[in-house]
Amino acid sequence: MDKYGRLLSNTFIFAIGTFSSKVLVFLLMPFYTRVLSTAELGVGDLIVKTANLIIPIASVGMSNAIIRFGLDRAVDKRDVFTGGITAIACGYAVFLAAFPVLSVFGVLEDGGWLIYPYVLTSCLRSLCSQFVRSRQLVKLYAFDGVMSTVNVILFNIIFLIVFDMGFTGYVLATVCSDLVSALFLFTIASLHRYIRFSCCDWSVLGAMVRYAVPLIPTTVFWWITNASDAYFIKYYIGAEANGLLTIAYKIPTIITLLSGIFTDAWQMSAFTEDGPGRTRFFSNVFNAYQSLIFAAASGLILLCKPLNYLLAYGEFYQSWEYIPFLLLGTCFSCYVTFLGSIYMLERKSIATLVTTAAGAGINILLNMLLIPRFGVNGGTFATFASYLLVFFIRIIDTHKIVPIRWKPWKLFLNLAVLLVQSWVLITVEKGWVVWEAGLCLLLVLINLRQLLLNAQKILLRRVRHA
Image (cartoon, rainbow, N blue to C red):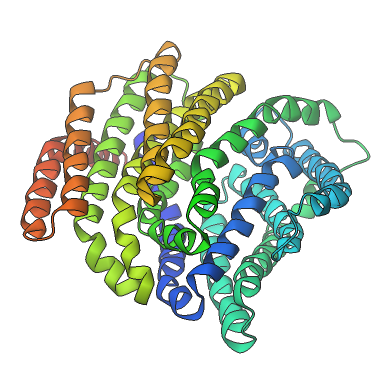
């Protein structure tokens, strides 16, 4: 099987697990909006966001290092897994020692104690799942995705319906699911065979730490870009508005889902592709990927009102007006992640850090300027602008490594259509459906040729190697 066929095959397997699992989570939206108030959902979301800020620090960035070194054929996988366990154990011990500091600064108020089990179980699951993926056990990785989500649903029912635990149950459902997932992967994949403290090559851990440490602030900066708007919105407007923003993020999650399925498979192909046709391979995949993401965003802008009507209950319905700019930001987040795989390929952690820092800085500045004046949509636009800036920096910088042949005019045309769609949805009250449908059709036509050409290439290659 050639590189296109392998990418397609892995994408299909990841899609089976990831798509089914994420769809189940997406369908929890009506459930959350019925059993939680906007304030409760806002508080629970802030706890999760705070934990996600701490996770890369407490885990010493091992999630990135495990997949990168685990796919390296020259490195013993036992050294990778043992090193990962050691780094996470040390990092979490330091985090536990910071308990008094967090208490003094009030981080543990409003159920903040939930951060501790959330961080631990998330680190353990990430360690096991990324290592399983690095061993290219894609079917097991995909199955775990489905099983984990079923567990989230079951624990949500138990904690929110049976015990009526509010935002505490909202957080604990994920904690319990991650713990079950980590134990499942550790047992089924026999990961105990990869633990060898007595004769471990600790130089591998040193290399992993040197690679991962620059990515820790990178992850923090990504967190700032993705989550800081929630804190600014709570400060300037209130927890209720943040609850609406939390629901508004659910529809852009559909694009994140599509991107995540592809990214899992793409990293495995990108890290093993070093032949003379690498530039053409990267260019073809990027252009097809870009067309798919833009088309998906256009369709979701068209459908976001009826989707929100079905999925958001009562006062949560109004969150539809915050969706368009979140969709735009998600598009460029996907492209930024794709270009980030080039940095990972060459282990250029510093370049990843610098570009991400630029996005985080502009995000904070725009949040401070726009949210007081334009409300929640000031924050959603700040997120979009941040990702757009990082994309242009990376597409220029990565050209020195892999000169991807992309079409700037086509990207700007797609962006213009999406911006007009966003403006129509937010401002036009009568006849907006006609305008939205026409603009969506226009964008699909702009990208149709690229999608068909790349689909044809992949299918022809699969026929030749059948």
